[in-house]
Length: 104
Image 1: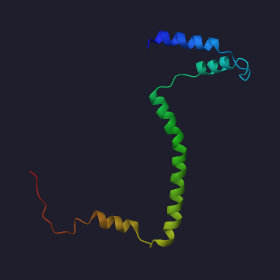
Image 2 (image 1 turned 180 degrees about the vertical axis):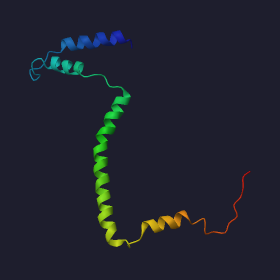
Image 3 (image 1 turned 120 degrees about the vertical axis):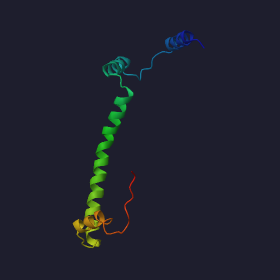
Image 4 (image 1 turned 90 degrees about the horizontal axis):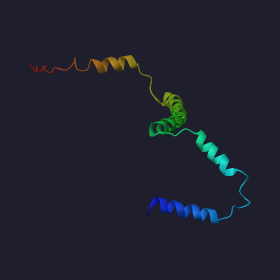
């Protein structure tokens, strides 16, 4: 169907339909003024807005899980020295007797 023909039919159908009394006075002007006042959003702006709206719930979830792991984990975990564990992990390869292969 031709676009101009469709537009003509829609305008003719709209003209034959009488407006209802339930629609407030100048409703269409207020809607159009609201639409004209809003800037058009591109995809990047829409994504940025959605991600910023999602940032607050993510921060709340992070804080709740962090508090839960801090308070629940400290009662059950044995007390260990983290620096000693780190040193053992870093120097684990030094204690093994494996020859070093050269790639040259």
